Amino acid sequence: MIDLKLLQKDFDTLSAKLTRKGVDITLLENLKTKNEELKAAKVEFETLQAAQNSMSKEFGIYKSQGKDISELKAKVDANKIKISEALEIQRVKQEELETIAMAVPNIPDDNVPDGADEEDNVEIKKVLTPPTFNFTPKEHWELAEQNGWINFEKGAKLAGSRFSVAYDMGAKLERALINFMLNFNSKRGYTEISVPHLVNRAALEGTGQLPKFEDDLYKVDNQDLFLIPTAEVPLTNLFQDEIIPAESLPIKMTGYTSCYRKEAGAAGRDTRGMIRQHQFHKVELVTIAKPEESDAIFEEMVQTASDVLTALELPHRIVRLCTGDLGFGAATTIDLEVWLPGQNTYREISSISNTRDFQARRAKIRYKDGTKNSFVHTLNGSSLAVGRTMVAIMENFQNEDGSITLPKALDPYLN
Image (cartoon, rainbow, N blue to C red; front, side):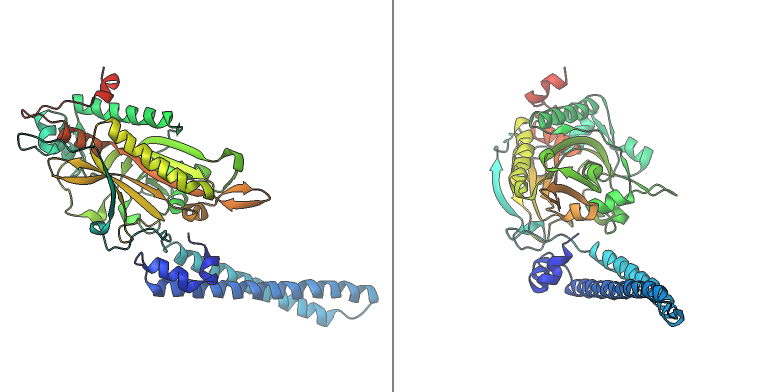
């Protein structure tokens, strides 16, 4: 959630930053109006409360002096009704403000480039050189089926389109990658944590998936529980509504989960293969940090994800997202895109984001900053999407006969 004090302090500057992200100015004007209405309602309540306190004191004086209290009592009783009404108005105004505020995305950092979509993202650098082949490289779904690693028909039989079943070496490779990534991240100082795959509404509101993206989530009928779209949600919300001792920061976590997304907004895209599935595996990085540490930690997380790809000998590039491609909760994001020879292009395999205090305000995650409580910064990123890493390995390490030579880094994990 954005800082509403900033909105009141300098509406023009804040609205200019948010319109870079495509936010409708009328939404911000409505938010400002609701914030002013809430402030007015609080003033009215406090005025009535002060009058009540004053009359209560006067009431005691009247009684001690033996004065007639009937008229004063009538005023006190009438004021009590006004206080109750004012409190209800304040509650309603608070709810109206929070409803609008929850729909406003994070403020983009000043160094985020302007742009409409992914075509306007800015490449920072390339890492490793894409392989060359003396044959036409195949795409991953053909290699997966040829080697008996992935069966898409069986996945569709069990659950419908955009599901798959991994067999034999495909299943072993999947497990090997998960263990390799978790071990790699642990050596970089991230504590491994295993979390539930179901979370409540408050957790998803805390990290910004709700209310905006409810149509993309799988919900349990008759329960306020959702399947997680990423491990970012439970890992971040481990500290929901808590005050963390300053000396405990930064808190660096890594975790593997399956992720579940309807991908309702992605109809027609990547319908074949493993690039965009409704259930997929991912190893996540999440850090809770002091504000002054978050920029350095952000760079460290990007480097960690890039180093995983380098260790797997996978060519990739590092890209800064433009305003039009920036996620709802992100202040800044760097994507890692892996080279896919079969598609002859780079495709996203990881997104690393700094959300500043946006998620912390929503989830009420604070730390003890001297004598006061301040909001932390939260950061998250993939390290990596397991299915897309398998895709990259199949395509980059393929041989002319369709066989696949696996990266040496995985030898200890595949016996």
